[in-house]
Picture (tube, rainbow, N blue to C red):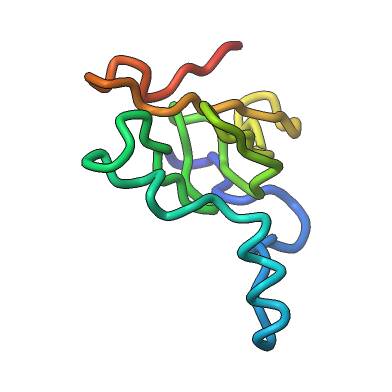
Length: 104
């Protein structure tokens, strides 16, 4: 994979950090609940994606745009086409058959 840039041009986005207790409470209102990552509690588990992770050897995850009951939407950089894209990552199904669907 030489010659492929690991990060797009521009400053990195490391998400939001709480500077005090009030900020922490504000963040709790917009982040995914931790129980959504425990398959023993919730059969539809969110895939734990990290900022900077590359999906499908093509999409560099830059920022979380939002989440809902069955998926999370991420802003990503398409390394091949050199464009910004939005990716919707579907939650794991009961047997893991829906781990990730990427539609070109």
